[in-house]
Length: 114
Image (tube, rainbow, N blue to C red; front, side, top):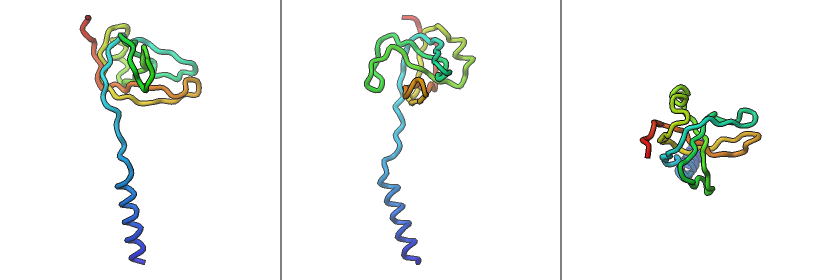
C-alpha cells in the first residue's frame, strides 16, 4: 500500500513539473483617445481607446481596443482625452460579441499632446 502511494505521488509530481507554466501576457502600452463603448446586451466594459495608428492585436489590425479599469471615476475624468494606457491583454466572451481582446489597464494617465 505504501509503495502504491509513493508511486502515485511521484506520478503526480512529474505531471505537475511537465505541465507548461501559465504565461502572462506581456505588458503593452497604447496611446489614443479614451471613449465610451457600447454593445448589444451590455457586453462591454463601457470604455475603449481609439488608437492613434492601426495596431496588430491577436494577429488582427485594429483601430480601437476595449479597456477595463477598476476606477471608473478616473476614466470619466479622462473621457475624450488623449491617454497613455499600460496593461495586459486578456480575452472576454459575450453571446453577441463573441471572443474579443480587452486591455486590462494597470496604469492610465493623460498623455502629452503631440
